[in-house]
Length: 273
Image (cartoon, rainbow, N blue to C red; front, top):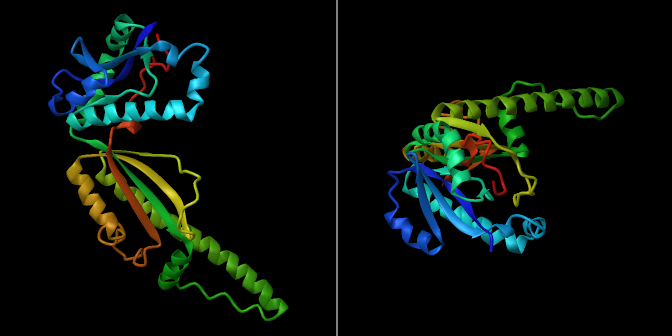
């Protein structure tokens, strides 16, 4: 059997793992210290990720799911212990020498990331829009002339024109409110990135997923943000009470390993090197 080293991630050599190491060791996880960087690894059969069976395996949800979950569980356990640089799923090395070569090249990047992360972790914020409530909220603050009743040919044209103007004005107004939220999230996070929005239909028929952000934050700051979002943001984000009826709603998750903020390590490829 051709063995390989599966990389889980990096830490400093000071990472305390007493509470997590028991089950990690039972799962085959160990570490190798290379020039001041602790590499968390696991030995496995490299044919699982390479060769004739690899493409088939990676397309098989029954094969893939338990391995992704095992990777995420190990990363999460180590991430809870302290500063951690999570590796991408499937980062494989043929032995210790290729892993050492990566560390030799990427050590400044790895240590800079670990230093910057410190006590911070990744948190997620999803933003949802209810257009019906948004129109109601806009109407309460707008002086826009009401759309006329289309009871004649002339009024029909006027109504159609006014309706388009109103729709455009509402769209701009919603954008302004989202911009307030974006600015606030940027101000309270150490770093923030915008993530893709999923295309899975929401269980709430009138709720549209319009924003998805990853934030790097200390837990105390994240808890304060969660409290603000739970109130609809009418304390600090929307001081003008524009979100009083909750036309924007939020879901906050975390803490997570800081996957959204890890720098690229060019030599760490999905496949043994």
